[in-house]
Each structure stands twice: as structure tokens, then as C-alpha cells.
Image (cartoon, rainbow, N blue to C red; front, side):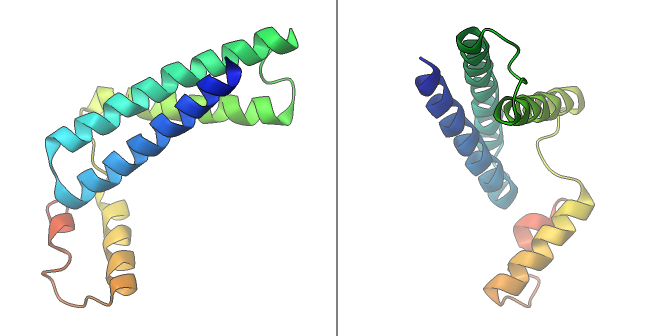
Length: 123
């Protein structure tokens, strides 16, 4: 059961990351909501993985380095989901978008304003 929960957790977090990145590129609300849904599913699966690990070890899940890093990741995801629900915003702040836009322009070789258009709505 622990391995299944671990695989589901990783898959949900990766799908959530992919949806959020796609949302930042396109701005479609449905993609952002899917990212939030996959993040919540990942949190539930991660919670079950931590619970099964603590039952198997008969101790707290942060007893060793692996468990403490897993718990830290769970807390980061929970904090992000809580802030997202509190502020009702699935996009990043302007400083992060400015950094992302500059990085994408550098990597793609795009120097005009048209290539950065999807990110300009955040500025």
C-alpha cells in the first residue's frame, strides 16, 4: 500500500506542476483549477503514504531523514494550497513572472514583446 500511495503522490504532484505551468502560459482557468485539484489529490495521497510509513515503522514519520523530508514536502504543499485558497489566486506574483519571462526569452531566443504576451497580463 505504501508504494501505491507514493506513486500516486508523485503522479499527482507532477500533474499539478504541469497544469500550473500550462496555466501560467495560457491563462485558462480550467487548467488552473485542474492544477489545484491535482495538488489536493497529491496531498491526500501523501498523507496516506506518511500514515502507512508511520504504521510500518511504529514511530513518527519524521524519525529519519527520508521521513522528515517527506513531511517537509507535505507541509510545503499544504501551505501552498492554503495560501492559494485564501487568496483565490493561481498565478504568481509579478517578480516571479518577470523572472520567468526573462528566462523563457533567453532560452527561446525571443527578443520581441509578442513572444512574452501570455506573461504580460500578470505585470
